[in-house]
Image 1: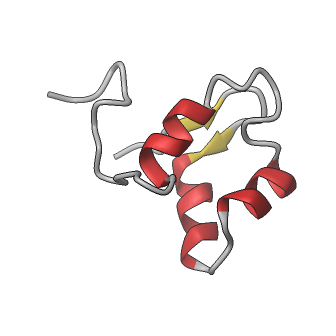
Image 2: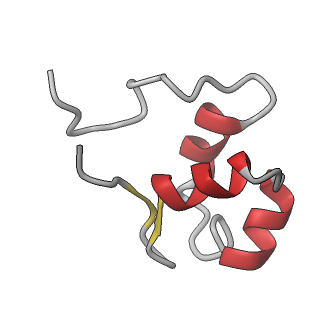
Length: 68
C-alpha cells in the first residue's frame, strides 16, 4: 500500500506519524516537530480520528479515495 499523506501543508505521511508513535512520541511532540496540523489545520480531524484519545488507527472512513 502506498503511503498516505496526512498533512498536505507539510507533506507528513501516515508512516511518519506511526513510526514516531511507535518510538514513544505523543501527538503534541509530533505536531511540534513536524508541523502537522499547524498549517491550514485541515488534517487534525484525520489525526484525531486515527490517533487521538478515542481514535482508531484502523478506521478507513477518514480516507476519501480508499480502496474498496
